[in-house]
Length: 333
Image (cartoon, rainbow, N blue to C red; front, top):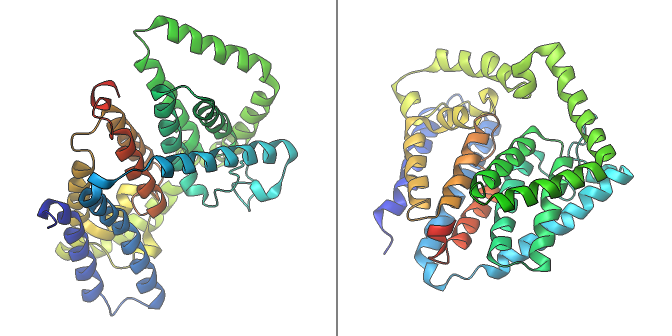
């Protein structure tokens, strides 16, 4: 028997979706209906997956799944590094616009930052759990390749992770000195490569800053979508039904900023649904789990494609379950 608390997020999202789509069918064309349906299914998939895990957690063993994912990330990191040094177009993050970045076999550039951060936290957890060649290789390859992805999201998540390491090991000055020394030596050894990467990032975003200002550079022009499409549509169509259950013409007016889009599609019902969802996901979980989720949510404030990404959210759920399989991790991580 499934507990009602597990079903609340799905019920709320389903009500919001059905009310909006059925009451607005006159203004929706085939493309709108198709996109809205896709967004709804993508948003609810991870919640249904979480319900499944909650029901089957006694028989859950995801060690092989985690190791397979990390093997893929190692191979992908190698592809990223090869793509950068040999300028292989196939491994580029962006196929148009001449933007810097190499993502290897990760096809969706809007998911790269999230996948990286989940992967690096997972690899770090396994490394602290047991130092092996595989764990060391997965951690180092994922972290080093992240600076070649070419997305601001990945850079910020890298900084979050470095801050996490610093705070976690602050009381152990030997660890801080050791990590800092290794980073300094590697930085000096690869200084030319690091300078080239820095110049590529600087040139790309500074040119946008000079032309369109700080916020356009920082948000990759999402602020323009917010001002030009989102806000006028919100003002014109706001009403009780839209505020509580969402707005119908989502695809034409979304801002690609996560929580603005969540509210636009599901309304207040969506915000409440995801409150219960994350409350359920993080119940009795470790500090690392909270840090991981909070960083992802914070990062999504300035971008999007998190909550409706079945790939990222499923990976997040599996990672949290893996980290918390051992009760001792509640205290240490």
